Image (cartoon, rainbow, N blue to C red; front, top):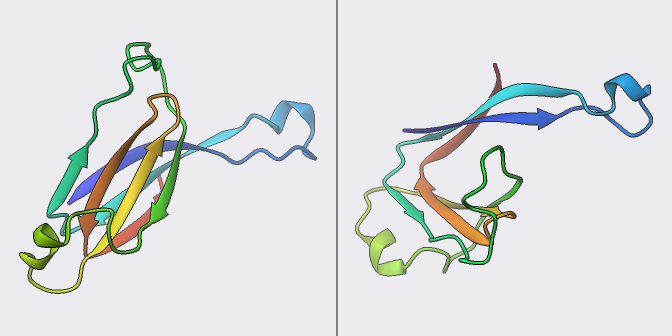
Length: 103
């Protein structure tokens, strides 16, 4: 299992100004994670700076993780990619399921 704790922007542009930048804590849980691949950040990126990062999470189609690795796993696995915008790099996970929960 891999847990990713995050702050989700829940404020909307049409909200009153005090709420537009409101965040809420949440957790992504990758169940039965068997493969986690972290690409090195781009050397020209802000990876050495402290603070949070923004990312885009997608459920991938075949090819994001080598088929030779996925074939070794028992059962059905989904592959997910986090593209970390500030680092210009990806984190890839193969897991049986993904669960989201507010915390």
